[in-house]
Image 1 (tube, helix red, strand yellow):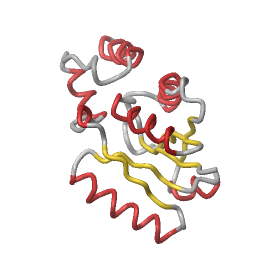
Image 2 (cartoon, rainbow, N blue to C red):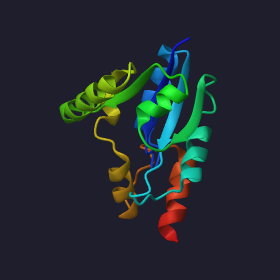
Image 3 (cartoon, rainbow, N blue to C red):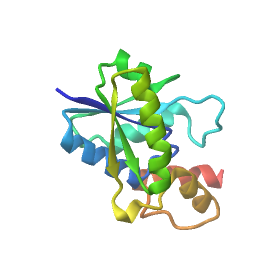
Length: 158
C-alpha cells in the first residue's frame, strides 16, 4: 500500500487544496492531509477548526484521513509510514520552491515528493488571497466549500 501526505496550513481549505487531495486519493491507497502547526504564524482559524474543515471537506473520500504535525514534515512521514509527499503546483514559481524543498527532504530521508499540477481553474488560488478578498467583501463562493464560506463570513462579521 502506498501512503502519501498532502501537507499545508489550510487556513482556510480551498477548492484548489481539495482538487489536489481528491486527485491524490485516486492515485494512492491512503492519503493523509496534514495540517502544519506553526505557532509563529497568525492563523485565521484555529488548528481544531482547520482539522474539522478538512474532515468535513474530505468525508466522501474513504481513503483520506486528517492529522496535524509540528516540526519537520519528513519526521511526520517517518513516524506515520508515509512513503511520499504530494504537492500541488500552480506555477513555475511554485516549482522552483517545491523542488528545493523536495531535494532537501530527499537528502534527509528516503521520502519522495510527487508533484501534481493544479487544475487550471485553481491556478491563481491561495488561501491568503481568499482571506484578503473575503475580508474586503469580495465573492469567494466559487473558491471554497460552502461551509467554509459560512465560517469566513462569521469570522469577518465578528
